[in-house]
Image 1 (spheres, one colour):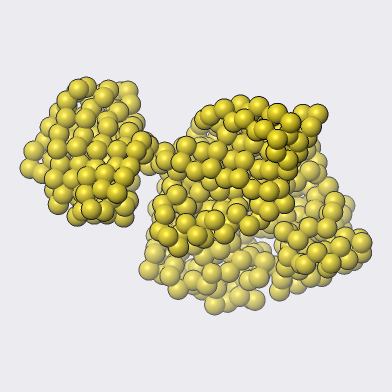
Image 2 (image 1 turned 60 degrees about the vertical axis):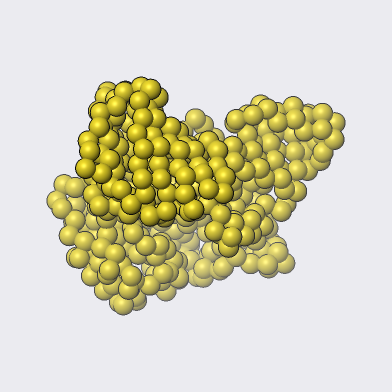
Length: 477
């Protein structure tokens, strides 16, 4: 079955309930769950169009990671829209609709998918998309309703009304009401009633239909988005651009459901009876891994002794669980999570506490991805930090300086060009340089293999925000 549609992937959020693997600078969309591919790549490869066009809407810190991730899966976006500010799903989808319209696809149905869902039943998914495309071509705004398997307080619900049918004979239901995440007693009533489905957060409509409805029922938001789009001046044929920050500041922070879907007169839900999981917590994640005879499951090397009903996630070290029950254990190089099963919705409170203490482990992993490569924090103390920096071939750090720290660079492998104040140095393995604070400097990989250096920082403040950029080929200056 070949369908004619555009695809838009919304790739944002911190996934804080999956901390410490998911963090703001490297969230859960880059995690592999059901396969060796990331959730983002699985989403992009889940269904194909006879007239393909892929747009990803994401944040500044994730843009280059999105492009690299999709390239690794042999799938590239026609357009990546970079949002300098978080403004929720309504502006994001409206920006994508404007982009599709500018690309001459205003009347082509646009399938909008979050980047972090797990769906195994591709045939069932394709059948639901076919119905959604049919309804979208008939001028409807379409959502995908998941028949609930149990009372769930972590999802929103759709109250379904009369049946709907297209000229092409696709079947659906009129959406009477969008309901926020309910308390357990109310969720149980919804499931028993039979006419409530989970709100999957997936949508389908033509850009022209969405933009017209938005202009009718959310005119202020529509004008704000159009003003930002006009100020951003996306160039024809450009595969990536950043939205204008000044005009985006004025845009309301609001979801697509609240802004448009709940108020629109022509909303239809198609029955999405395929398996579906938004993997919003470690309890949900555990369900995707096979269990042993005692109910234990693991990702990575784990040994269970006299233990039952546990989930262990760790790819770096051996984890031995002895005499424990009903626990979730998640191990990363710089943070360890131990939680009772059923409490994983509260893990966000850990991230809140870290943010309150300005602890960067809420945002960054010990290995941080940058447009030019990666750096890994090897060791740190009150007045020093040691990093392993890997610069990809052709990669170049920004021309920058620091107010509070001095840096020592030692080349381990590769060929480095280093700007150090007024000097330009060319260093090979086993050569080094010292960069005093307040000195402009830059590192470039001149070779065709990765450049590896060890950086020793010494100073009274070592935070990542102590960077003043003067020039940057990745647009961060």
